[in-house]
Image (cartoon, rainbow, N blue to C red):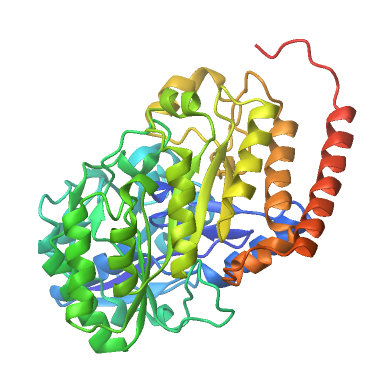
Length: 468
């Protein structure tokens, strides 16, 4: 049987799917001079293919099936499996309808297939709800699936074959996400050493599909060794939401890379309170060159209301500074629009982002994704009816303190104030010396200009009596 795996590229803005935002995906559209530059940059440096599609390819290959990948073209086959996202589901269902019109059976998998099945009704022959590998094993053995299908999470992730990157031509053109080099990394691969998340943040979709499980260090190292044997020097993007949550396991992976002398550089995501200098030294010795993490909000009370454990600011600063001294790039994530947020609190968060001075920063608007506890709690406040607008950039609910225009303006202001600083470029290029006075002066001028723009905007807004 010929299996078509559709990992489709979005055409409007920078679109990132698969493991991003728990699989719902991210669409980043430039809406200002600064954000348009960021959109262009991300299109070039964050275009890794789907790891889940490549896991499915490996399962079908084991059973002797023929595999074809597509990122947009219509491809002939007997069965097509389409990776779904919230921000690009219309494109995905349109592709599926064209495939069905040519006599191909079509199934969907991914976060939307699991948590927003109604968006796919009538567009395919079956929908896989849950982690897709168990259902793929049934398909590979010849079972015919129809309608919504429950796919049980595998308790032992070590039984999975390694992703079949050798079947996917896109692996030769991907680039790494955070590093400082303007040149493409020829072979970069996403890798999952664990699934789901051990935390309980109510707004996060990473833990909504299945419980947290991890692979053994030996299994992860065997996959990395396999990649190095096939491709030589590789760049790995660990897509675990919390790579270092099991300290001994992550140390064993890092030490194994060093002991086997694998030609690897890598980046990972974790919480800053799961890091310390000793652990960072170990990771750096194994090839760590970039790390991403959530800060979300400056206010501890705001974080506690969404069940996120606050991290002391001094620890955040010390870990970022230690990464800077090592030469490890950092990217912090911030969320605007928590119910307690005000104009002043968001301005304070922006100022903190500037002071933390990470290599990069991503600012998003709070979004109640399907399947999350936040969605259930905020359902009466949701005003947006277009699922594709749940993209992390668009206000989707009635905020008690901020208008949609204010939220969008502050989002744009965050990007402008963070990236339009002359000193940001010195940070991005990895300069470790203290900023000279002339650079601080130019920073102050840039900050004053942005403050003037903010004053003009808020003075132009109509007075609001109450938004309760």
